[in-house]
Image 1 (cartoon, rainbow, N blue to C red):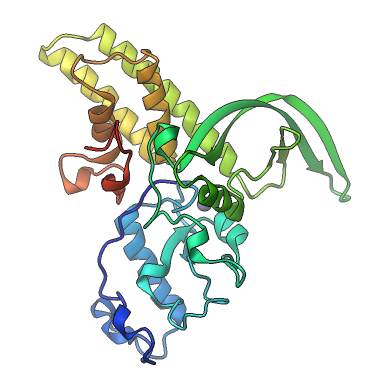
Image 2: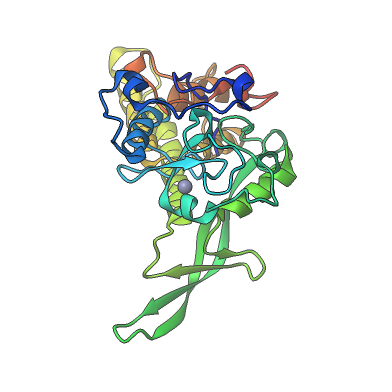
Length: 321
Ligand SMILES: [Zn+2]
């Protein structure tokens, strides 16, 4: 889960007026919209979704899966259970969620839970690829796997597969109790049974978060290898060599943006640099490399993972990104 910086919005609520009964926000005034009052709340969510995607990119705020379409406006404090009458329309209560995270989270935090029992990407999450500095860590493991299929008559059958590499999320050292609860609330490792150490795949599965997370890891690993090769084969300062290095870097950036899972990319690059398998130009530290490839570009149009709150990345090793 990457830290998100929430942009200011005209929908921000006046905190001092919380207890005062105030009218619902007027859709006619929202971003200069010409919506008629009769237009539904869904239309307003549509505008919120557009604003959130413009700020953070087309990724689920929780699992970081890329979503070309179908991202949902998600309420941290569920509008069905919240004691706060403005939860459904409060800008600061909105995140983007994929259907899997949204469905799993459902009405949590429920009436027996507090918002502060969990970590939220726009306010609490501290991320570092070093698990001793991070709330979440990403690990690639090799596990037994099964495939469950269903035939036309509705009969289920399960077969054992060869062991599979999967990337799981677990709590790091920072806020680990809250991180564990958050992972549980969203079931971020859906399909993986930690007790038996088995990954279950279903042919009818709609929850593909682990699969795509693992794919992003594979892409990132290949990207480090290709970068390393190109830097080895084209090390000079002449234009031709520089063009080759720039070309492969741009390809890595495009792949990362398409594959999503910023936290996975940063973790893989950090690990590969630490293991001396990605020895790029001498003065290119992991911090500047990650910043260059996955955080900022040279202009607004060249931003990588939009909305990443760099103030909450790492403490010691990456703090001054
Ligand atoms: Zn998600």
